[in-house]
Amino acid sequence: MTTMEAAPGAGGRGRRASLGALALTGASVLRLSLQFAMLPILARLIGPAEYGLVALAMPFILLANVLADGGMGYALGRRQEVSRDEETTVFWLSGAIGLALSLACCLAAWPMGALMDQPRLPLLIAALSPILFLNSLTTVANGRIIREGRFAIFAGGDLISTVASAATALAAALAGWGAWALVAQQLVLWTCKLAWVASRAGTPIRFHYRFEEAKRLLTFGVHTIGAILADFAARNLDSLIVGGVLGATTLGYYAMAYQLVRAPDMLISGPLYLYIFTAVARTAHQGSPAAMQDLAAAGLRLGAAALAPVFCGLALTADLAVPLVLGDKWIAAVVPLRLLCAAGFFFCLCSIMATTLMGLGKSALRLKLSLALGVGTVGAVALCARFGLQAVSAGAAAAMGAVCGLYLCVLARELGATATRLAAGLGPAAIGCTAMAAAVAGVRSLALPPVVEFAVAVLVGASVYLGVLSLFRRRLIADARAFGRAQSDDQAVAAA
Image (tube, rainbow, N blue to C red; front, side, top):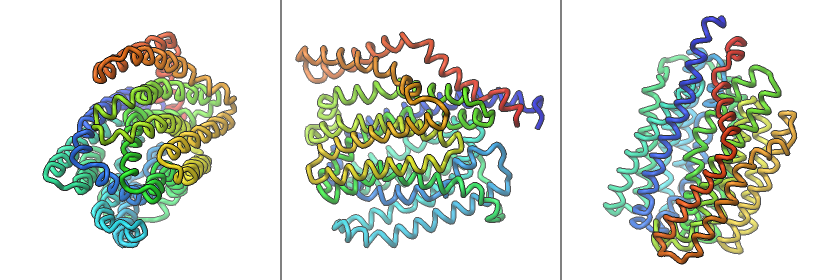
């Protein structure tokens, strides 16, 4: 491909990727708004015990779901060019893996139910197992979308699947399905995602399979799977420990707090991760160390600036938000929620740095760091579980913070930069959150009615944070423009 032929497409790709990332963020806002609107309704209709039972079943499905695409989705996304034969081989290979995992989960469900002493658990796991096959069929389509920067397709799929699954969950909960309402929600969600993504991206369905064509992708994929499994352990095995040691009801409180903490990650970080991954992958092909250092620092600065106020604000107002939104029976989730906000923020920073490493092609290094994250988090939860829910939440936050520091040092070493330079990117967010906490504390001292106090605290805290952030607007705008240039850099095009 010549430079003259590729240049127009490069500029179009950059604009498409930027607009797609914005569309994906907008879709995430709408999706999370709907989920938050549904959360108090489902929480009241289903209750902590039923919610906890599904939270006990989901880790088994999510663990197997990590393996469903063989780690080849991002491997396809990072490649500059992929042949139709390679895509077809990956389609059939990942589909076979997903189907085998679905059957394996069904077979393992009853031993798992006996081990956890939960007689209702096996049927829930078996009913959720088709998710694995549905997810595996999206591998090639996801790879195409990431490679071409067409993130708006993900945005459309998120909206459609969220609306359909929310309507299903509400109807089932009103009908008294209990835990099964959440199972139906997940099945509809993944069915809609597959139908939309496959139809928009175009999945090659023809009879061609040569394992040799997927070997290189699998090498990258194996490291990716290992890293995602370790991330899964950090995110989900704690639920198994809490449920096994403290019971399903306590797990319900923990799972609800954790779901609220995951909301900022799903809202902002998903689109941000994709945007960072594609930008870093293209910049890495240029081989410019200085450009990579600048891009990595910019990613941390933008990510922290966007995520920190959400986690900080949630921690500051948790005692007001939980009873107002979920009801008084969820009050035991307040303290775990406050502690897990710190864990959630550190996890997001780790994910940003891991995405940067993936864009650099350092999948093996990302695997090692993810293992450290999983071992550290699960180990802390296991050690603290016997001391109660608050101790578990504090242990998880402390472990996540320690591993986040390790990520920062390793990334700096790989980039040839100093950890201090990368950590300085957290400065605007840290200053803004300090000012926001002081402002919210002032509002909380006025002894207003709970609803009014919550609304005023959110409004004042957000205004103060944005005011502080405006002091750094030139730097943040320059960071955003750097990512825009990376998506369509002429030097990357010429190299192609």
